[in-house]
Length: 158
Image 1 (tube, rainbow, N blue to C red):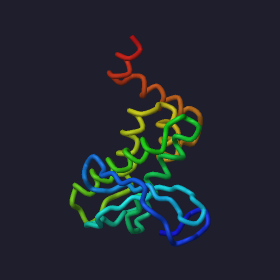
Image 2: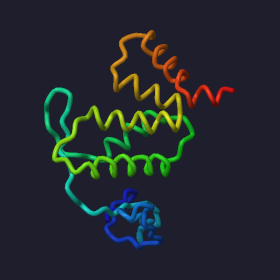
Image 3: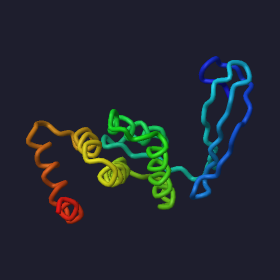
Image 4: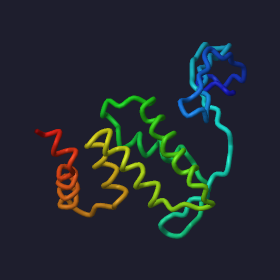
C-alpha cells in the first residue's frame, strides 16, 4: 500500500477490525519511512451493479461517490468520517443485497437522503437541493416544511 504522505510502498499494520456486517476489514497502517498513519479498507469484490445515470449513461459502481456525496452534504456539521463510512457501508449493503445487474442513481440518491434525514436536517436539505436540482428558494422552504411535517419530527418538537 502506497503511503498517502510520502509515497513509500512499505508500511506495517497496526490494527485490524472486521466491520459489523462482516463484509470488510478496516486496517490502521503506519508508513515505515515517515511514520504517517492511515486507514485502509478491504472488501470482497462481488457482483457490483452498473449505475444508470439520469441521462441514460451507464457507469461502473463507485462507493466513493456515495461517501463523497455524504461528505459534501455534512461539511462543517461536526459529523465524523466513521459515521459517514458506516452509512456508506449500509447503503452499499442494501444496493448489493438487491442482486441486480443495473441500478438507477434515483434509487441510490433516495437511500442517501433517507440516511441523511435521520442523521442531520441541514445535511439532508443540502443533499436534496443538489439531488433534486432546486431552482429557487421556495423549493428549499417546501423541503424544510416537509421535513418537519413528518410524524417523527412532530414528536421530537413536543
